[in-house]
Length: 215
View 1 (tube, rainbow, N blue to C red):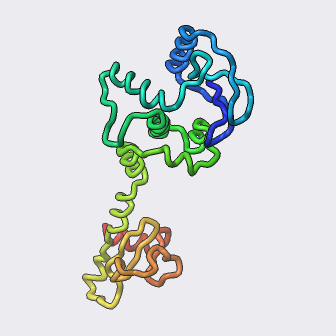
View 2 (view 1 turned 90 degrees about the vertical axis):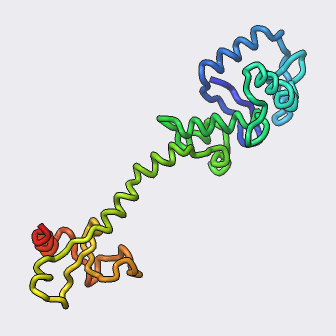
View 3 (view 1 turned 30 degrees about the vertical axis):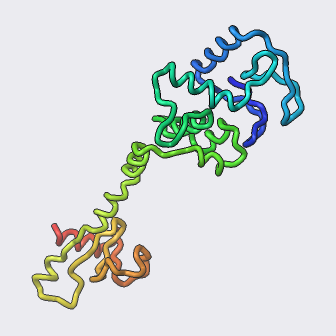
């Protein structure tokens, strides 16, 4: 667990972190000389700061302009990419997106609590859907399958054989019922079918009869 002080997007909080991060913090505190507590400019409380050395807090500019470039060089990765320079804020955004797109992802509200945001609107700016997750969500929605089903057409063979051209003989399968409206694709009341004269509910004797004729 890591204690987070008051910050610009929320109040103080304690949140879980990965064991690797915890080990790195412990290792840093072992090699760093003991540091005195310092005043938090936001709350005026005396607290322990993680990024503190020689009784002084490390400035934000040092992290982004000195420390991160050194780490990138040691890791053999570029200092920047298509989105710009690698920064501490980019790291926060990246891990938020990874947690949101994980195999067993955190919900938006869980992620909001983990990031310490007051509003979920702020959290949404940190979250990016991966193409894989979008593809998975689209597949699970079965949108294409539903539309294919809506375009299935049932033909009343007996109506055609009898020459009763004034009677409906083509029915569009809506899943929950059948529609005999000839210009179904232009219907201004799409899916508002319950009281429509062209509608035949699936759970009806008329629908059973039409289905048997189709067979």
